[in-house]
Image (cartoon, rainbow, N blue to C red; front, side):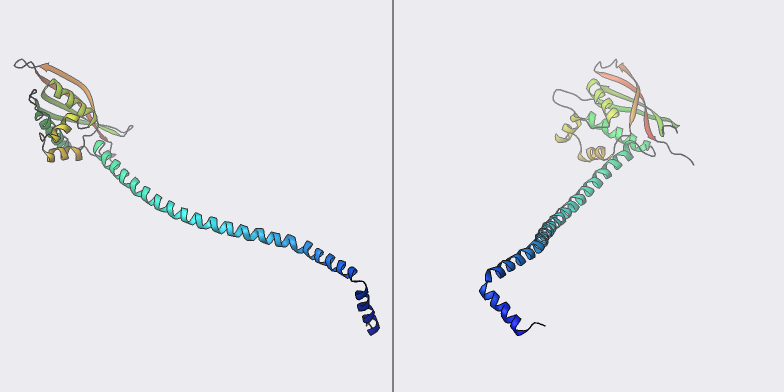
Amino acid sequence: MQTPQQIFSRKELMRKNPITWIVLLALALLFLMFIISPQFLEWQEKTSAIKTNQSKISQLKVTNEALKEEIAIKEIELETVAREVIEEEKQTFPANLNTATIARILEIYALQLENLDTRLYDSHFQLQNLDFGNTKSFEETGINETSVSIKVSSDYQNLREFVLYLQTGEISDRVERGRENKQIATNDYTFLENNLLPVMNIDSIQINQQQADERLLDIEIQGRFFSQYQSNE
């Protein structure tokens, strides 16, 4: 235990030599700063990093919501496109070949070609006979082939139009212009748009010129319509 004389002598010493104590105090403060400063800097860095990450998270949330909306829109668009493609495939490569529908399509298209008259051009096209033959199945390729024989009377221009239609299933520009010029009924054109020909392969075309009118031709087309092979199992 310190005596009053010792305490008094220490205070007296401080009064007499304060520089020593100031130096000691400064050293003590420097020591504390040396210990605390790295921790303080580390705390500042972590605080700054937390704020930066919080900002990034907020931005990512906004971006994520925008992407969700974009994905939802793309899914709707994809579903719409896929639905159209699937529906088109059902008609162009059907599970079951509907010969009655094919006959109706060709009859209506033949009527449109017949109606494409102009002041300088007397359009001629008649579907005279349509005969579907046997269906052959090919399990290895997953395809059915149904033979068809088509007989028409036509001029040269409409023959080209008709053959292209059989090969592509696409309505020609002339028929499109005929619709615009009111030569073709809108309901007939709509029927052709909504009912597509199955894929067809033309095997042969036999052409004979008519004796009564050299502008006209008698044509016989042999070909095959394709459909999906259906297993009986």
